[in-house]
Every structure is written in C-alpha cells, then in structure tokens.
Length: 417
Image 1 (spheres, rainbow, N blue to C red):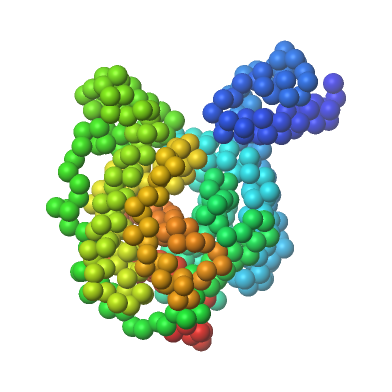
Image 2: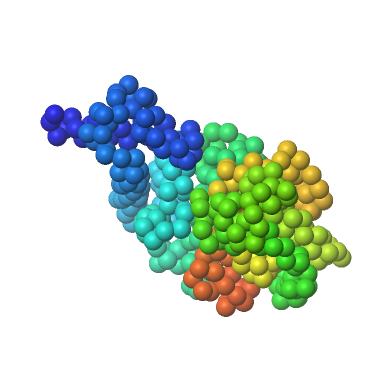
C-alpha cells in the first residue's frame, strides 16, 4: 500500500472513531465498533493502530493539529487588524469548528481535562494557542482597562465561548437560540456588550460596603458530612474518571454497600451533594439581599456570596469545576429545579424590567453563566496560588465584564453609565 493510501486510510479511521465513540462520550472505546462502522475486520484495523490507546493518541494529535491550523489562519488573516476583526475571525474559524464538529469538542474535554501531566500539557497547548490570538498588548491598545486587569479580560473572552459551547452540547434548552450563526452572534454580544439591558442605569457602586455585607462567614457553612466530604475529596483528588464508589466509600470509612443505603448510585450521590450546597448558597444570598433595592447591587451581592463561599470551600470549588465540564455525565432528577426559582427571582424581575437582556438566556441560563464565569476564574486562581491574594478586585472586574462586556470600559464609551 502506498504511503498516500495509508495516510488516507489512517485519517478515515480517526474520523470514524470521533463519530462512533462520541455516541458514548468516549467512555467506551472499542476497536471493534470502529472496525464495524468501517466495514472492515479488526485485524485490518490493527495494521494501522495496534491498540485503542494508539488510536486515542492519534486522535489527540489530530485535534491539536486542527486547532493549531485554525489559530494560525486567524493570525494570518487578521495581521494588523483590530480586536473586533480578530474576535470575529476567531469566532468564524475556531468557535464555528467546535460548534459544527461537536465530537471534537467533547473529545477535547474528556481527554484533556482529567488529571494527568500529559493531558494538562495538551490542554495547556490549546490555551496558549488561543491566548496568542489576543495578546495583552492588543487589548491594552484598544481598551481602557487597567493593565493589571487585562489577563482577566482575556479570561472573560474565552469564558464566553466556553460557556456557549458547553451548553450547546449538553444543555441546549437553556439557550435562547438554535443555530451556529445565532451562537456566534451571542458570543460577540456577550464579549463586547455584556448582559446589561437597555433600561439598566449604572450608578456608582460602593463595592467595599457590599463586600462587607455579602461576605460568607465560616460558621454559615454546612456542617461537615463524611459522605459528602468523601465525594468532594475523591473527585478533587482523582478527577471524574477515577472517582469510583469504592474509593468514595473507602474515603468515608464505609463499605460500598453502605453507600447504597443512602444513595441509588454515583449520579444520585454527586447530585445530592451539589444540590445540598446550592440550596445553602441560595438561602445565604437571599439573606444578604434583604433590604438591597438596586438590581445592580443585588447582582454584586450574588457575585460576592458565590465567590466567597467557593473561597471557604475549595473542595466544593473543585467539584463545581468538575461539574462545569462533566455535567453531561450526571443525570439530575427531573425535579432538580424545584425550589430554585425563589433564588433567581431578582433576575426574572430584571429581565422583565429590561435591566438585563432577554434575548440570549432565561434566568436559569443567566445564573449558569454567572456560575461558569466565577468557577472558571476561582479555579484558575486556586491552582495558580492566587486565590484570595488580590482582594475583591478580580470579582469586581468580572462583575463589570458580565454586565457591560469589554467595550463597556472602552475609551469614550458611556452608553450605559
């Protein structure tokens, strides 16, 4: 067989594996299913890949190659251009590729997110290539954000596309649109304009006073529960793929059968842990909002309560970060939203009063966007050893970006202020 034909067949096998294994979210990776889908024998497949790990590694390289080429094309096509042109090129090439090829997106996070030095290096390569598209010098030249906050601005750019891709893949009902074009347009609106509606009136916010009011105190946290603590610790230590019931039971000092006395299965266990914490967060938020009349101030209280809770509970932060990426593997009960409406009622009122935009997400979608944004940033700062070392400046910056986008601080632009 010529090298050209062999390369062509190799690419065909890789493409088939992306499609076939995506059906089980890359959990079940049998060479038999790939061979069957291609109408060839497993023996014939072995001529190209001697085992499934070799094929998975080839898929890693294929995804990295495509991403590298897409980023290179963005740079070449926008040499000397401004931020908006660069952003739109990124959206049309990189973001569109993952929207239209969801198996590549899901594969990237199944393979690159779990804890291992090799996977971390691959995830770091993707992040570095994307960050190079928006160098801090470009952001500083075009926007009036202080230099020390520009890294947060860049994080925000990718948080927007990351959030949309996640919910496009796994919880599309929270989005107010259904086509790739609408998703790309939503990403531009989130990044440039933020979530503020036309009736929002910005007045000077006493951030320090609100932070003192909203800060969660250690004594307000839920009492430790050995099972929930074990779940959090094992997920934080092992990652999703190795967080077995046996390890959770061992950590809790129980037998696996003992765990089943409390929970139906692992999904039930993990969901109940998250649900327990989120209701506690909701009640604290309601207490802190009592007497706060301005929507903008209420919203910042929400930001501070959520962020300070995660700061006090780094193990819960680890689980939330995991849940943010792997939510498609947990099947929450049908009544999972019961009781949560009261905690987001202030967002409903803001949307109806056009203080928040209504065209992208409902109130639960907005809450998920806030959580995604904060969990991502808190998690980055936790692993970089920065969590809590810069006061509340990062949270203030994310709050303003959430409302007004990057252009909300652009020189001479005061459309909402």
